[in-house]
Length: 314
Image (cartoon, rainbow, N blue to C red):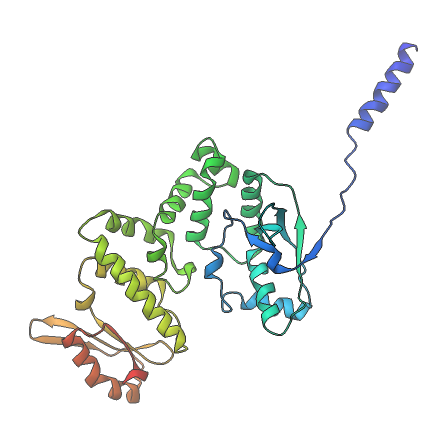
């Protein structure tokens, strides 16, 4: 073969080498939701999913009649009836199970099966978060905490997920807060990154940790009672303030807030001097609710029975 022919053959080989690979078919399976479990490194706390925080997806699935975007799973072995592990798609799994129990017994769970290492599964999960309902800072922190062993150091991990190392440190700090404290928040979305540092300091102080945990337990019970009564959860800023005050033993001595049925404040009672109370009435005035609540809220403040009252209770 002469030099000219050899050059032509090499050129053709080069062209062949740079051709893009043939597309791989998007293979999906429709499986029984009960054949799936959630991977322990998943970004969502599955036990915190409820009908309320999945309502948008439930409505979308019912409207479409099926699941349009498959969940990412990988196969597992020796787990009984469980055949797949959900890497991305915990809310979709929860909704498929809920629909099966509420009038849609044949609703299938659409999955895409992939072969993924733990590190690849983590990166897939974090990238998938961008296309769905936002993940709370606490859940994201837990996800990052679980994945630390997949990287040589935190700098490498921060680069892999596309965030600054200082931000990663903040996520890891909030992840170290016990779930008992996070449970004081009605929705994890209300537990913000900036809450983590002050709460961490209280947890590390032997003189405040016990009172902090007790306050969190009371707040969780209050949140559950509010939800049962059809009232909105306490705001995240309110929970954070009461956690701090409770840890310092002052939760019973702060202002008493009285709220109406739509969670608007109608009365605030607080100490002015040793023998006087200051009463603030936010405008506009709800006269009927104010009249009904006034006597009981002052009594409650003096007796330290509660620092928050709803007008419907009086």
